[in-house]
Length: 425
Ligand code: S3P
Figure 1 (cartoon, protein in one colour):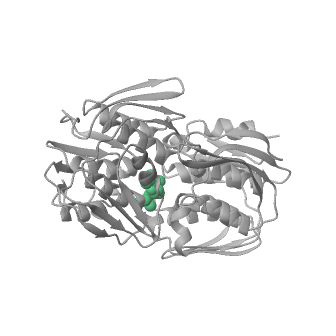
Figure 2 (tube, rainbow, N blue to C red):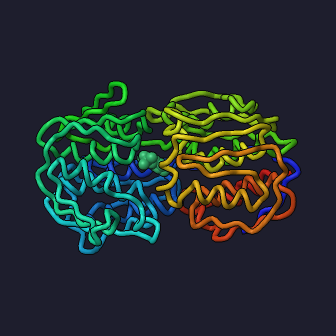
Figure 3 (spheres, protein in one colour):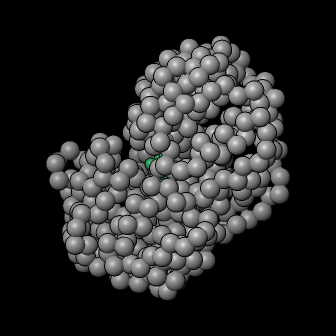
C-alpha cells in the first residue's frame, strides 16, 4: 500500500462498528434465548472469525446488508464442533470464547494464525483452571492451539495481575456456568462492554471500583444491539486531522465509553482542537461526533490508569507525538509487547525508518517530537493497527510511504484506505 503526503484533509467520515462490541454481540446472542439483531456490526476479519466459531457450534447466524441476525439457543444450546474452531488473528475471540467453552458438556479445540499462536494464553488458563476448567495448550507453551474439555465450574474470586478486558470477560463468561458467584478484580479498570451488554441480555452483573461480579445461570434473552462506531478506528482520523496542516474533519458515530476514551483525553492534553458534538446514548454506550482541526501539538506523558483506556491507540499516539513539540514518554504499557505484534518494537522500528527520534523502553517508548518525517518503506508486521498508524504518519511526512502488507487493515477496518483517501483535499 502506498500513501503520499496530504496537503490538507476535509470532509466527513462515518466510523464502522466497534470491534469489541461486535464480538460480544455475536457471543452473547449465541448463548441467549431467541433472536439478536445487530446493526452496524463490524464486518472485519476478526469479528467474522467469531461468527464462524459459533456457526460451527450449531448457531444460525444470518448476515444481511447492514445487520446480522443471531438465532440464539440459550446458555446450554451450543453443540460440539466437528472441527477445530478457527479464531484467525483474533485474541478477543480466543480469550472470550474459552470462558464459554470451559462450561460446555463437550470438547473443543481452538487455533488461529501465526500471530495468535504466539500470544499468551496463560492469563486465561490460570483463572479458568482455578475454576476447575480443563484447558490445555496442545504444545505445552501456554499458547494456542488450545483444547478445552467442558466441565462443571466453580465460582471464584480472581485477582488479575493485568488490566485486561479479555481476561475479565473470559472469567465472567465462565462464571455464567459456575456453581457460585464469580468475581474479577484488576489493577485498573479495563473496557466494560461485557458488563454493560451482558446485563442488557439479562445477566446479574455488579461492578464496584475495579471488581466485577456475576451470578451464575441466568436466563439470557436476545436483544437488539446497535453497535457504536469504534473509537479505536476513529483514533486514526483524530490523529490525521490534528497533525496534517489545513485540516478540518467531522468524525461521525464515535463510541466514547469512558473506559475507552483515553485517546481523546491525551489529544486534548497535547493541545488538540477537538469538539464533541451531538452527544447521545446508543445501546447503553455513550456516542458522539467529533470535529477535529489541525493543531500545534505539544508532548505529554502517557501512563498509569490511563493506559487500559487507550491501549490500542498507543501506536497512533506515538505518531502524534512524533509531530508534537517536546518529549513524549509512554510508560506502564508492557502489554504492547503481546498484541498482534510487539508494538513497542514495531512502532519504534517503523517510525525510526521515517526519521523519528524514538527509543524503546521496557514498558513503552520515548519520542522526541518536532522533526519532519520522510516517506520510506515500512512494515506492518501484519498488524492492522501498525498499518493504519503508519498510514497517518505517511500523510504528514514528505514524499511517499510504502506499507508492506498494508491490507491487514481488513482485521478491523476493511474500508480504511478508501475512507482516508476520500478526505484528501
Ligand atoms: C479487547 C481488549 C483489549 C484490546 C483488544 C480488544 C476486548 O485487550 O487490546 O483489541 O475486546 O476485550 P486486553 O483486554 O487484553 O488489553
